[in-house]
Length: 299
Image 1 (cartoon, one colour):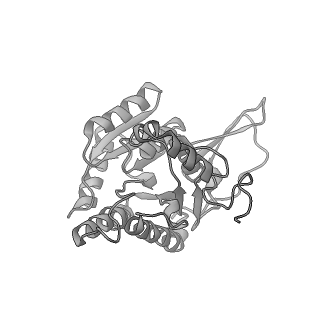
Image 2 (cartoon, helix red, strand yellow):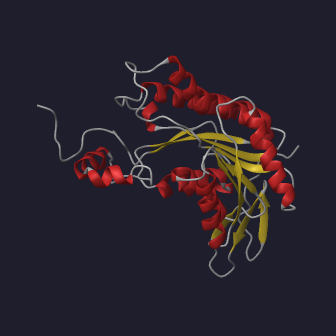
């Protein structure tokens, strides 16, 4: 069994040092550490678009071979792969519908087949559970049992069994990052059932971190807020007043971008994140931290 990460040596220059399955490079002239994911493999579920695509691109840019999972849109997943390879990275797509019987087995079978086809070593170092459905529906008033079951099957059951089935393929010293939502911290109208699924993901992350710590595997959750993606950009463009409202909810006074979330995930996947585990990290730009300073107290 690989030992948990040791402290990074402070006195090395012009050479490469391995920390867990990752590499650190120090430039001899600049004395600057550049952390990379060279030699690693990452699986990102729901990576065909939006935040998942940005995470896949960010991990690939750091040097990881990225498995781009998709549920239904193979063309969108291949577009993600094309963008990664055009930028000098390495990636391939694997399709598996989540939330149905045998989903995790099909996913991992596709991962193993893809790695074998490329002559890559078996197993992965980083697992990002990003795939999910939901958002504004269903509500308490309109939800049907089938809606509820589908939400939990995709958002909770699938990540659980993806991890369970993949534990023998996730190398010691690896990383699991689960994408949650700021809806677990803020009561957002119309997101009750969805927020419940993400609350489960937060608990899953904390408890799993304790369970896998002995293998040097870190587990964390990342909570995005409202994020501008290709799925909602038209909605924002058609409702500038709503964009202004959402902007005002952030302490940083802007709507989040997929890259904002991807950078947080990349940090947790990197050697720099080796001592962070069992945490639910807010990556919402300070959404609903409190009253805006220009609003003043309520009357």
